[in-house]
Image 1 (cartoon, rainbow, N blue to C red):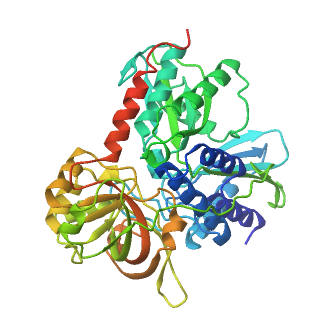
Image 2 (cartoon, one colour):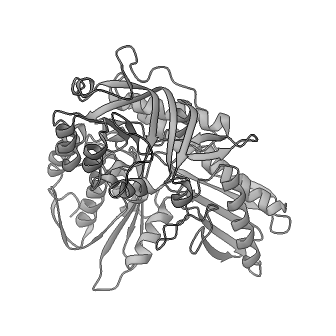
Image 3 (spheres, rainbow, N blue to C red):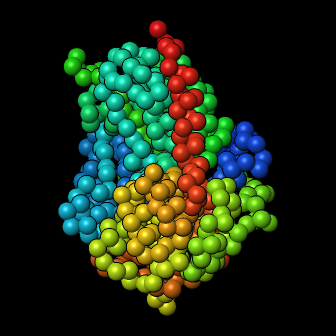
Length: 507
């Protein structure tokens, strides 16, 4: 293996498994602000536990390793074509080792390439500079937070905030709305990069570029520096909190960039990133390919596994097949511990089940919105390397029908679901259980055995139906069988808080 490929594999592995120091500090500050015993504090403790486990075991922090995106600066005359080949081979190897989940899917056939290669994947942006070395930055941005990216064309009308015009105050309103609309679906507390200006494409690129800035830097533009400080302070008044459970910390970082626009277009583009903010960089010797320097690691930040977490003393044990009577005895806020078999099911499985029988009996069973990282051991047995929840809102068109058709009693996911599912839970006698988003190592520890898998060849590892034996798997009831939804309550409350911010701040 070439030295440059080895350096790239180190970069991918460290980015996937070892959260940067500036992100760790932001999360630790959030932990100190939340009241002990609240749902937000519970979630943050679980997140920190997960960060420690991922680093110790060198396993993915979150099972969704996103679309690997590399930003590369090379000297004039450097062979970028050869470097791109090395990047692609490093991605293949990192996928084989379980540091990346196979995430490259043909949008026409639905076929997963299995190695993260395909048209457009991975993403590599090359730039030249006059330095003699090579800089390679990488961001792994999962689909849950990528789906909460949003772009505004000014002027526009925004829920709760009214008219956003083509001025600094209109920009302010767009950014606050971007945080509000993410709720817990993007694995809050999160980070945002904002691009002001440009066109539809360059605006989003500018927004994502801001995520490569160190969290503790100061914007050289004093107007943007003031806006960044205002957004970070004000967004935390929305009370959305970690995982959308409510709480004092909703946003952990805000970075804003600006570029010129054409007169007819005024875009504000927002790139939302989850708490699992995975971006690192290396500087390598242009001749040898060996690492000379790590970026974002100038001030190391150790983390200790926290005390406290889920209140397991009063937890309700759920074991399939679950009775309707037990489900209807649960209410929002109850902590449950799941024992026995659960079945993963994401977008492709839900679409499949609408028209087909299930490959296993789901009566009284539990569906887990999860696309795990899976590897086979030397004996050919499947091992779970990472297995946190995915964003449940994507299954809203299907979930109530699937629950009724198959007699499912519990759905595990993150971020909550909408009114159709809430009505379906009440009708069929089922509950929605919120696991902690991004806590892929925390939940992988709860999985004791892989009982089998169905539809693997058809859908690939993330979208297959995995049958998992779990022990002491904790989650919180956030939507019950009586028509109650914590997610709706938090969204309604945060909208009222948003309306309080309607009046102009920047003239």
